[in-house]
Amino acid sequence: MPICTIRVLCAAACGVPPLRLVARRTDEPESAETGFESWSRLLRMYSFLRDGEFVQVTVEDHGRVTGFVSRFGDSESDRGVFLDHFFKSGKLDANQLAFTTDTVHGVSFEFQGTVERGDGKSRSDEAYYVLKGTLVESTTDEAKKTSSRSREVALKSFPQDMAPPRE
Image 1 (cartoon, rainbow, N blue to C red):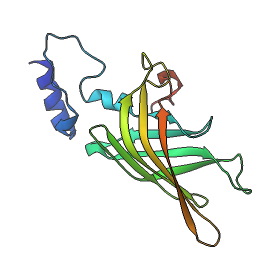
Image 2: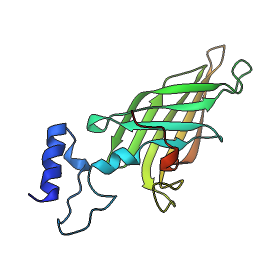
Image 3: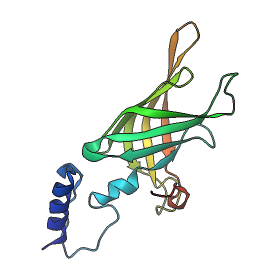
């Protein structure tokens, strides 16, 4: 049975949408960029806004995305403390990625953009993949007044050997 047929059957049995599959000739060498298994390597840990901050992204069934933003607090009460903003919602459709976080200490984030190949030459290099798009940071003060700040970002993937161990 050709490899691409086996992948289709395995993907169907696992509930993976066919849009993630890439057909290839069976006489071509296996490429790191083909097949649905590349998506699990594609989305993992990425840099965030400041050094030491990061985004952890995991693709679940049918393009559902889970994860969190881990960042340093900015206010007087949490300055220098790591705060984890878990995803309230997230979706991957082809290379289009979107997620919204829970509000922690009056701050939440919303990202809309794309997953692209970066400048890294291999997965063990920084920026092998890059999340490019618009990040909106919403802040609610003590008087319940909300303000939003939007910026274009390019979040670089961490080198593969720096990613947390798989459980």
